[in-house]
Length: 126
Image (cartoon, rainbow, N blue to C red; front, side):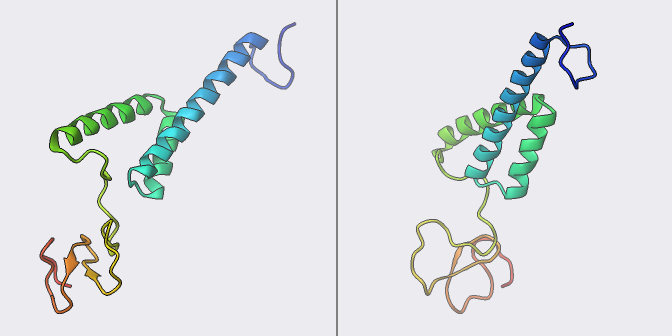
């Protein structure tokens, strides 16, 4: 009898090990997808969503890497390679802004003068 105790399926030890290794590989892929999404500016919720999407629906890993490849090609054509894919969160300063007295639009993070009431970047009332 080659069954593993505690597992109700009729799996041999080799079949069980193959399934275990496959699940570990899928988990590692899901973790890399989540970290990659977070690194490219996705919110924590979006990164966690990508993790579970890949963990439970393996074709989403293929979809993620296909979309990543297409976005990278588009960025190379547009000359924006290496910049974050997602816009900055509302109210955050753009990268490279270091002056402490600067104001930024809470919606698009465009620099503002101190007396502006309408954003030049997105046109919203401040």
